[in-house]
Amino acid sequence: MTHDPGFGVVAAPPGRGGWFTGRVHDDAGPALADEVADVLAHLLLLARSQGVDVEAAVRRKWLAWEADLT
Image 1 (cartoon, rainbow, N blue to C red):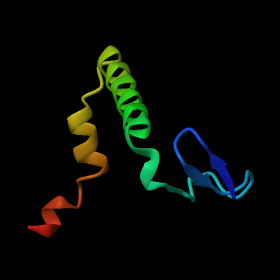
Image 2 (tube, rainbow, N blue to C red):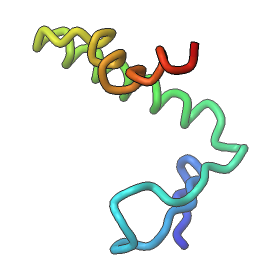
Image 3 (cartoon, rainbow, N blue to C red):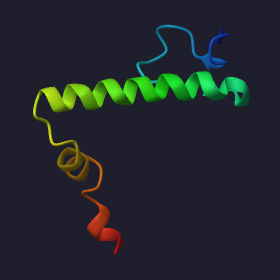
Image 4 (cartoon, one colour):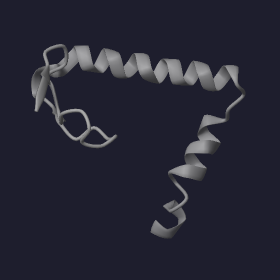
């Protein structure tokens, strides 16, 4: 396992798959929150510049099962 002192992220070594398999330490706090906010803001700016309806896309991709729950 490796440790990123910037956010307290523990991740599996390279070559162990494409998904994040570690965890974020409790002390990552504001630094990690700021990075998440930056990524989200950039994605929303990209979506707006390309005319992507984010709400419709989330409903189609992530909430398709929602009707089954009611």
